[in-house]
Amino acid sequence: MTREEVAELFELERLIVGMTRKNTANKGQAANYTRLWGNHAALLNIDMDFADPEGSVPTFCFMAEWEGREVGTYFDPERGKSGTEVVKVAEDRIPIVCSKNAGYFFKNAVA
Image (cartoon, rainbow, N blue to C red):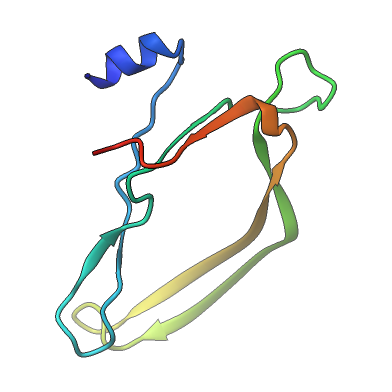
């Protein structure tokens, strides 16, 4: 099935296919990339404009800010022709699952 056919079958507004891989090799070894999701599939209703927890459409989860943001800079002489100033922004966020009934998880869904 195509992505469009799957989205139509499950009446989804948007279908996101994750292709994230992780290098599981130890340092110094040849790269060994494995799929993070494996053969599983998750169908989740996630409201990107979630504002009201008492709203009429349930959302599976939302991201809550935790501890705010941190911004730092440092000079890296190894980058660029004559070094560069690197700006690092870190933001702690945690996912809050607020409605488990707004999603489905299919184990070993892909052959």
